[in-house]
Image (cartoon, rainbow, N blue to C red):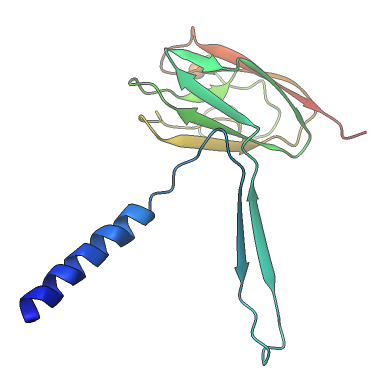
Length: 153
Ligand SMILES: [Cu+2]
């Protein structure tokens, strides 16, 4: 009986691990609703996280796809590496990375993954500056693209 319970426990662990994967799917919009509130709680909060999957730039076959993406100010772009090679998206101009006018990051601006993304890894950046911002792969600078950030009105 103990042996059977052990097998059941092992199986449960596999199921939990299987469900724990946190992959971004390019075609679906995921809405997580997480209600922490109870009737007796004074601070009833409902947290809704919406993953907007429209703004994904995929890196595959050595290219960024799409290479040009138009977004609104304050939106987040996710760079997702689906290539067998690593990629390091960063603001132009290589190698100083200073075009995007927000300081921080590791080289010349805040728009910088600051490390090579391995297969399956992603880097997200929220654009708060309106303009046309070019980026490149710091590992292989011939791969490049642009993010066009527009006002809402
Ligand atoms: Cu670079």
